[in-house]
Length: 175
Image (cartoon, rainbow, N blue to C red; front, top):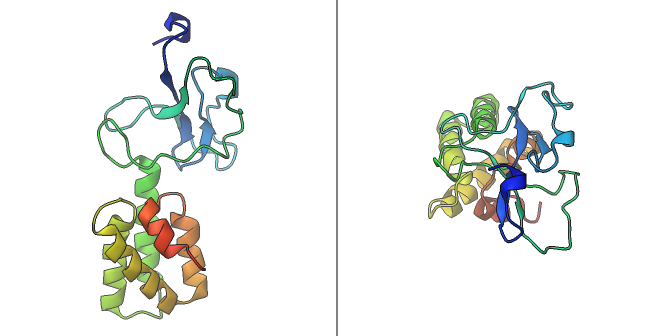
């Protein structure tokens, strides 16, 4: 829907523009196209505005008529979406971060092969908010602590944007 076609009473989600590696470029690519970029200025990756699985727009900020507060063009406050709300699939940056964390799990020297396998198995559940998230996050926190501070910091940098809210509370609290 084009912005000019909306009535003053319509609320709507703008379309977010995000690079394929997961950097938010513009949370308002329809209403503020002057902030759009073809490539990310942080990593050089191409940018997208549609889910690669279902081709629906990536949900940006919510516009509400009568709101006196205009969202800032700065995207640091806009949360990186993890899953497409239309098809339920993880966005490609979520999959890339998960894959990198799985590879990192194989590199941790302070864990036994069984513990590495458990750590890897926990990753899928800590990016989703499910009943299993609490168990997986608790296990992940214990194993990463055993792996040591450098490994813990590497996992934190990789996963902080894609952890479920449940996992964030467990894993990142009292660090």
